View (cartoon, rainbow, N blue to C red):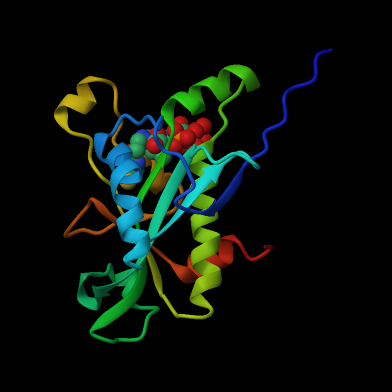
Length: 194
Ligand SMILES: CC(C)(COP(=O)(O)OP(=O)(O)OC[C@H]1O[C@@H](n2cnc3c(N)ncnc32)[C@H](O)[C@@H]1OP(=O)(O)O)[C@@H](O)C(=O)NCCC(=O)NCCS
């Protein structure tokens, strides 16, 4: 029987040496960010960007960005508020963007014979990173802005990522359903064995 090819990937901080020139995405903004804006955000310490690569290779196969943010306490759902101290604003980390290289993921799926689940891998990596960082600089929440594909992008097959995030326990805010939150406490519970 033929052995399945092994998947070997790493998530590392973005550097100038990384190559996003061939990055593909159903969302133009996701492609544009990693090709044109990540450099500026990282060098100004506005956001940190972490990239998915094959070890020893500088080609970017996926990425996410993180930055500090705070959220008005009263905007949080009751069940989240109940377990947090009542400061006017609550500390949080924003996962601003997350994307996988569409063509790379498709090719990998063909060679592995199953979905490589790169989005899931990146989201888990981001949550673990945020949890570890929160022990140094407290952040009560992880917030995600789920970007809606444009009408044109939807016609070309782009999917709304909202359900991708809710699948992993992120809750949409009532006042702004494109913004999702998960408490660091919930992340700590989920990843307590790590
Ligand atoms: C959203 C995105 C990161 C998901 O990554 P992916 O590698 O395609 O997803 P995975 O294969 O890891 O999927 C894991 C699970 O989520 C589901 N899923 C993935 N995208 C989904 C979506 N848009 N809606 C609903 N479910 C979704 C998968 O079907 C899979 O479910 P399963 O456990 O039942 O098999 C990727 O499609 C992407 O880069 N999209 C374009 C950019 C984008 O929308 N980014 C988010 C906005 S910032």
